[in-house]
Length: 110
Image (tube, rainbow, N blue to C red; front, side, top):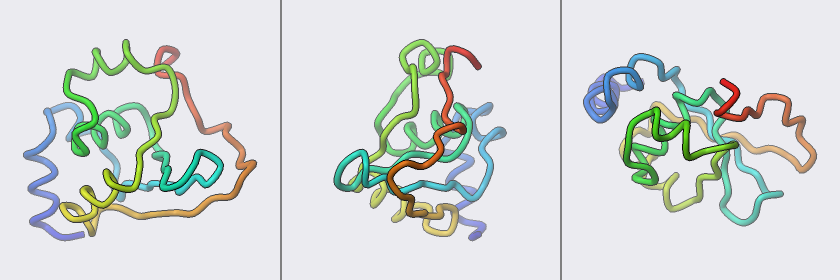
C-alpha cells in the first residue's frame, strides 16, 4: 500500500468513515448482476466510504443508512475511477453465479 494513497484516502473521507475503513478494499465482480457490476465485500461503513469516493453518494453516514436497504452495485466506470486514485488499496475479485450471499446485509438492521 502506497503512503501517498493512504494519505489521500484519509483526507477524502469524513472522520468516522476514514477510521472504520478496512484495507484493502475488496470489490467482487458479479456477472449475475450484469456487465461490469461489482459489489463490495465489507460492512456498511466501507460501502459508504467507497460510494463517497466514487461520487455515487453525497451525505452523512446516517443519510446513507436511511436511504439504502441492501448491498449497492458499483459499475466499471466507478471502479476505473477508484483504481486510478487508489490502485494499491483496492483488490478486485471474481465470483460466480450462486455465491452464498450470507455476508450481505441490510443497513437498517445494523
